[in-house]
Image: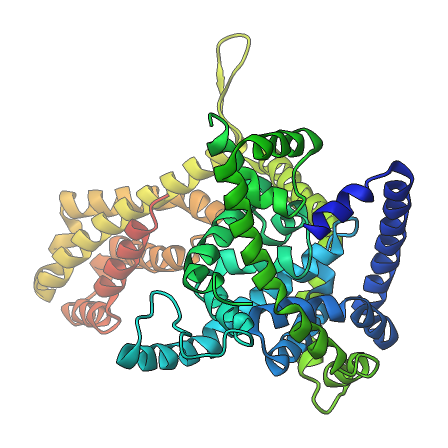
Length: 211
Length: 268
C-alpha cells in the first residue's frame, strides 16, 4: 500500500519531467558506454557493471534466495552482456534488455541447478507431508513467514514467479516487465494477479497464525 | 455487487499502484461499499506483507556483497587473457564482426545490388529469341545458325562414317583374289565415288566446327578409298591382302564405330 501511495504522491508534473530528463541522460550514457564496451574498453564495461549490478543481484536473489547463486547470475549476466553488446539497438531500454538477459540466465540456471534440489526435496516430502502446500506446522510461526513464503513462491510457474519478483522486489512497472519478458502489458497484469492469488491460496493455511 | 468481478481482477494492480486514475477511483469507490472485495484486498495485502518479509534478507545479502570490487572481479574474468573465455568465444573470429547490426544497411544494399546485377546480366546475356522482320521473314539469332551448322556437320559425318564402314566391311570380307573385281564393280566404285565427293562437302563443315577427331579418321578413309579406286587395277592379290590386313591391324572399323558413337552422343 505504501508504495502505491508513494507513487500517487510523486505523480506531480515537474517530478515526472525531472525523471524523464534523468532517464534520457542515463540512456545516452549507457549508449556511449556500450559503444566502448563493443570496442573492448574495460573501464566502460566496469562502469556499466557498476550501474546495474545491484538490480541484477536483487532480481537473482529474489528468485533464488541464495547469495552465491545470485552472484553467479550477476557474473554470467555481465559476461553475456559483453558477448552480446553489439546486439543491443541504441535508443531501446537498456535496463529491460539487460534484465531480459538476466531473466533467461536465471531460468536456465534454475532448470540446471535448482530443479535437482527440488526433486530431492519433493522425495523427502512424499515420505511425510502433503506437497500441495508446504507444511510448517511444526515451525516457530514468528520466524518462518519468509520460509513459508519462499517455498510458496517456488511453487509458482516460472513466468508467474518471475513477474512477481520483478514487480515486488525490483519494483518494475508492468510496462517494463512486459518489455523484459516480451509479452503484452495486459498479460503481465493478468499473470501478476494470478501469481498473487496463487500465493494467497498456497499460504492461506498459515496467514492467520503467522507474523 | 455488479462491479465485484471487475474490481476483483484489478485488486492486485490496485495494491501495487498500477492502475490509472480513473480505474483507481472506481476501485476505491467500490471498496467503500463492498465488504467482500475489501476483505479480499486485506487477504491480498497479507501476501504483500509476507513477500515483504524477504526484504531484510535481500537487504542483508546486498550489504554483504563487495560492490566496489565486483565489477573489477567480473572484468578480470572476462578481459584476462589467461582465462580469455570471452575473447575466444565471442570477439575473435570474423563472423561476430560481420553480423553486427550496424552492417544491416550495407548488406541490404549488397543484396539489392546482386539481385539487380543478376537481372541485368540475364537481360544482356540471355539467348536471343527468334524475331519476325517487317517483311514477314523470320530472323534467327546468331547462336541458332552456329548450332545448326554443328548439327548438320555431325549428322553428315555420322552418315559418311556409316557408309564408309559398310563399304570397308564389304571389302575386308571379300577374298583378296576378288578384290580387284570388287573395286571394279559398279556398285562399289559408285559408293566409293559418292563417299569421296561427300567428303569434300563435309571437309568444309568439319573445318568450321572443329571436329578434329572425326576429321582425322575421315581423312584416312578418304585416302584409302582414293587409292583403292584409282590404283586397284595395278594391285596384286597379295597387295590387296596387305591392305585388308592393314585395315584390320589399324582397327579402322573399330575406330569408325567409336568416333560415330561419340558423335551420336554429342547431339546438339
